[in-house]
Image (cartoon, rainbow, N blue to C red; front, side, top):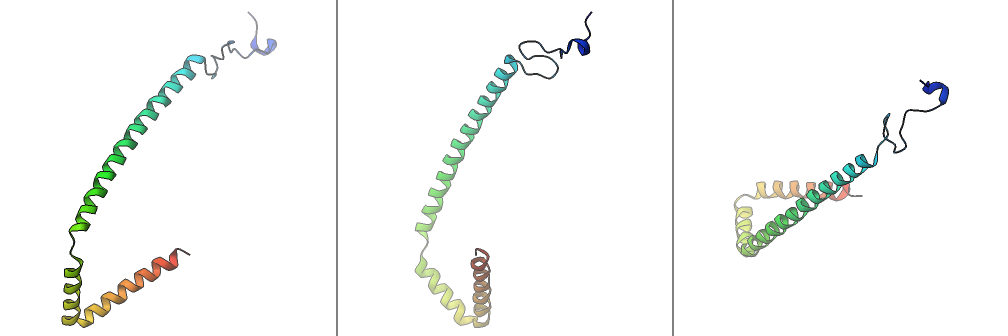
Length: 105
């Protein structure tokens, strides 16, 4: 029996199978698995797009139903009745917007 150390062989077969090598069957199996996962990801992306499209449509419908004149009138009335709170709220909103704008630079 020949010693692998003396002959210089590594014990791998010509197809690459043995001692950690990947054979053609393994490569085909991996390719098939990758294709299966690609299909699943593609299906999930289509479902996500449909879901987002549906929700964006619902939000658009809600925005159309908003009466901005009524909201503006309510805000003016609130500011007249509670001027101190209106100033504090305005200052807080201004501070947050300033932080957001400055953070983008």
